[in-house]
Image (cartoon, rainbow, N blue to C red; front, side, top):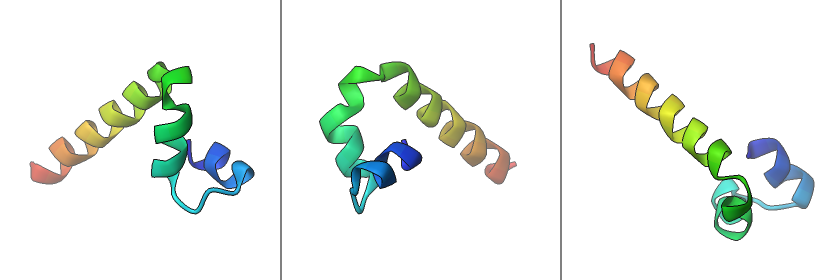
Length: 44
């Protein structure tokens, strides 16, 4: 999402996700899963 955001000229990935997120739901889920793993690892 970050790469796509920058190529489209968006200052924030949030903008890209809000506008185009419905087109790639698996990418959004993968990002959410990665965030969850990071938080879980940090809290251990």
